[in-house]
Length: 330
Image (cartoon, rainbow, N blue to C red; front, side, top):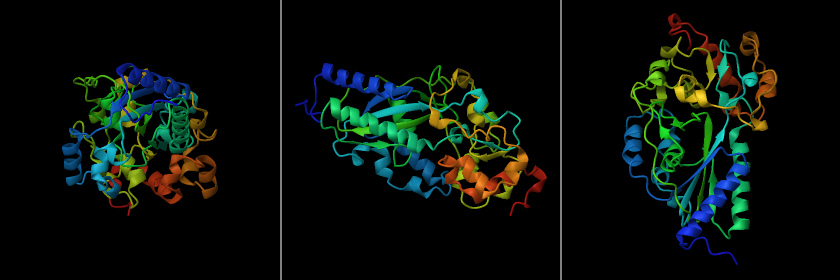
């Protein structure tokens, strides 16, 4: 009978478990895996509270829900001991990317199959392996769908630092990856320490943001972020942003595209993230005259489904408006 994982183990046993989990994560295609001791995120609490109190989350009311659970995984999983943070690369190879001069653009993370499905399958496979090899481990898998502060836990595990763009950045990797977690009642050796901030004096992301969403470094004003405006905001995009979207109709990659650390980005190896063959070179006319049939063909099981056909059509139209069109988007 395997050693009961809920009980404290000897240091060597905790280290062995951590090494096993990291090895299995790599076999499933995760690019990085880090482990933290489950506990209260003291540094994040005042930062999150201030962000919410200033309404920088906009219409994303769910961000204000379950405040205590966001800060303490032990409120999500009984007896939680460890948070396993995992990174999965989504940077597309050149042939799958929209050209630099594309009139209408969508974020690279949305090119292929919805990452929620892809990563959940991998997480469940990892959890099954842990239970088969180690014992009766209790836990849950999380992929951007529950009150978990993904970036904070990945940072705590030493997987990267929080950049001025608020993206987690990993040395010699960049930031084009998804973050997911397993919260387990399994005690494991946590990774040592957080990484220093390697942004230095660089402000490229702040300077390049088309809408000024990053004017306060290390903080994003979601109400100005193009990703929020084209995905989360269910209302029409406010006319004040006319001429500022630079062609982005679903999400935005500007802060990542200009980040010097993303020169290290390498193409992913996940077949599910490959876009429909028509998408990279889709002409502007097809974007503007998109039918529901074409929308379904291009974005079946894609994150773009979250916005929906009508929202995408509105965003495509708005993203093409010149600055002098303020007031004409209503």
